[in-house]
Structures are given as C-alpha cells and as structure tokens.
Image 1: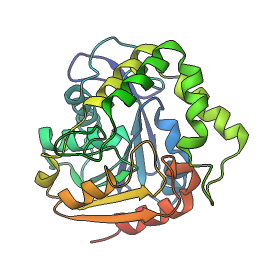
Image 2: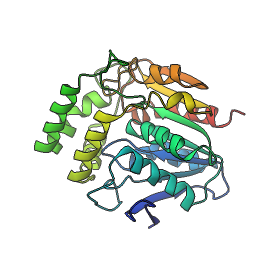
Image 3: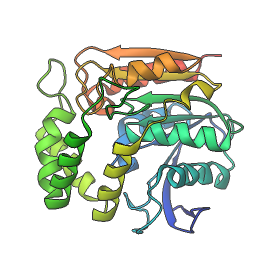
Image 4: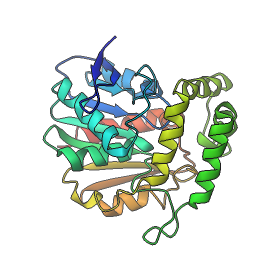
Length: 277
C-alpha cells in the first residue's frame, strides 16, 4: 500500500492514487470521521476518464496511523501539503468535503498555490459553523459540545443516529440504500476514538473567514439547501461571498452527503469546473 510520512512528526499516512500518472491531478480531501473511501463515486469515474485522482487518509482515519497528536488545523494542512510534495503533484485541483474544505484553505494560506490551480468545496464547513460576532447565524457552540459528549459516550450511536439527516433522506430526491447507510457508519467507526474526538474539537474551532479573500485561484462551492451539518447560509454562501473568484452551485433538497446522493450531478459539475480555462 502507498504510504508517506508526515513532514511534521513522521506519522505514517496512507493515500490512494488512481488513474493515469500523466492525467490532470485531482486531490480529494475527506470529511471528519470518514477516510478516502467516501469519494468512491467521484474517484473511480474520474480516474476512468483520464484524471489522476489522489486521496489521503487523514491521521487516525482510514488506513493511516493511529496517533495521539497533530489534530490541529495547521498540522492537518501540513500533512496535505506533504502529500502534494511527496508525489510532486502540480497544477492540482483540491476537492474537499466538510472539514476537508477548511484543511484546503489552511494548506493554501500556509503553503501557497504553487502546486494548486483550483479548488472545490463540497458541503464545506468553511469559513466556520460556530456562532460568533462575525457569524451571528452560526450554530450554537453548546450544540456542538453536546454532540461531542455523545461521540465520547457512544460513537456508534452518534453515527447511526445521524445518518438519515446527514444524507438528507427526509428530503425529496435523496436516496441511499440501507446497506450503504450501514457501510457509512462502519466507515466512520474506522476512524480511531482519538481521531473522532480530536477532529470534532477542530470543527468547533474552525474560523477561516479572514483567509478566504487571500485565495487567488478559482473555487467551486457546492452546497445543499437541506444541509443541517453545515447550513448553506452559514458556510457555503458565506464562502462564495468571501472568495475573490468563486462559483456557487446550490442543490435543492441536498443534504451533507452530496457525494453519494447527488454523485452524478456533482461529477458533472466537477468535470465542467476542472476543464474551465
């Protein structure tokens, strides 16, 4: 299996590398709790059509090493940049879901855009979900703290109990099979208890609003109207307004798990964005 070591502390990190080595590069950054396997509906078809699709399992997630430290946003961003350097990827497009969007922002503001030509946020939490003076419509931090306590008490119940809402199955047009729901919960349980606990704290702390105006590259923002994990007005629309060069695509009835419920539409939007001059 392909692995590389974190440039920060030597943690052993797993990555997937699909498609032709000389194809246009797309790097997928997964959300909290999952690993790169969540991107199967994007990586496989894009790789089959000639893109080089790369995805790294965040530390403590998927097949990466179970470690105690390094779950601050700076280190996670440095891990992502370490992957770009390890594979010497250039002219890459970075595609991040949920927490992955914030990792991309911090990676670009810490390391620049020398290796990256564009980015996409899919149901991203950037610029941040927590209510503040600058984000009065955000989520009450106490609500997120309560969810954190459920994770610490019974992770399996937290994932299973939130699966329907995550995929927006209460809204028209959002369909995944019961088997896929079970699989998604199992994937989340693949992240370590330490990683789940730590990244939940990262989500509560994310605020990259001041960094978004500095991103001098095209950004596609894809978000669903029924996303309760990262409400559209708090995250996706704010990102699009703060970014200097953005395109916002809003999916009616879409929940947080757009990569599964709206895979075909998302892939079409990604292809169109990736081929834009």
